[in-house]
Image (cartoon, rainbow, N blue to C red; front, side, top):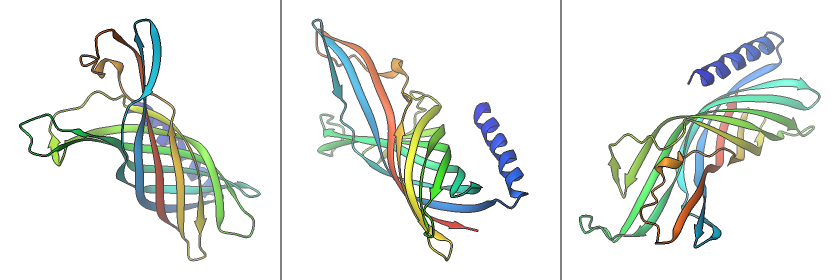
Length: 226
């Protein structure tokens, strides 16, 4: 958390410095994430190594926050942002629990992040269109786990607090200062602590080697720039 606050402080000082030179515009944005988790499980079976994808499905999450557009020169801009972002995934399987009446068992994890992307943006000349790319730091605020529609009221400590992702996308702003944006978030760091991976259900002879769990999301937002 201290690192996250330090990053925000440094960016705030930078933005205020540019604003005194009248090279910065501020904006707000909000929209949705189509979020998922990319998970690969590496294991050994009687001496042979295998890698398989674990089955997760997408969820819809909310996102919203503020941003600054800093003119660097020519058609290049720096765009730091600070947003609340819901990520995560779900897993749907047949229900073998006789205490639950539903025929399907949906396990959903909603990961609540504060995210800080720092994007380098290039504006296409004489248009409202831009393309951008950059890193994103995320700080996990909490996790909401659900079985079907029932929330599990247990604290979930299975995920690391920090998450690093790469961002790329495009936006278009109209002359009335309203814009639309689309981007893809590709997780770089592993978000799950390995000691929380359940190996008790593995078949005899199967030995877990490693598991990689990374966030991913398509994000679509509407923004207004002052």
